[in-house]
Image (cartoon, rainbow, N blue to C red; front, top):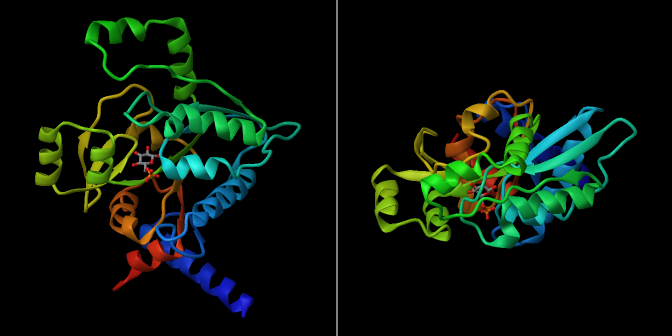
Length: 258
Ligand code: BG6
């Protein structure tokens, strides 16, 4: 029955949360590798989670890019109240994604869907270090970086290392290095091995992994059986306040043999 199924899912959520030692997992039915609509369910779960967790004040929400984040963003609904106001910002500058899945776009869509505000961060990809340094002195960029530094919520995806390296067109030498170091997961420009240790970081401005440790509301959104290894690698060392939003297929694969 539906009640049994729901109960079963709640059990799976508890099991997965305790496996990672985190507060909460939210699990959608199905396998997002097989059915894209499962990613829309992530978006609805994310919306519920944000509504339940975000405090009644001015929040700054830093978001990452990716296909999962871009699709999930479409499902947000108003998160504004009399006393709650949300400002969305991209968490980090240009890490080589196509426009529609860039953090700037995800943050704009999330803001529009949830009736909040957003600010963009425009940092081109290929810059000489002198141009880069002077760009960082630009008041408009400084202002957004300052907002990112004040974020009290972060929402991000988790990717497979080599898949992300190829998608971002990283040089062959870097890809070889990632293989040699057994990279399995990638999140916000950091690469992790199976033990969840950082083995490489794409240097970019904006939020750093160490900053996330101190941010009270963190949501990781990733699913699909094919991502199970990557999710396990990243989540085992993830900040403990992270809520994981995933699907049944990834959860079962992660817990297989536990
Ligand atoms: C992003 C992260 O949110 O999601 C990336 O910043 C991560 O670093 C990516 O790898 C996953 O992308 P996708 O397209 O698989 O959802």
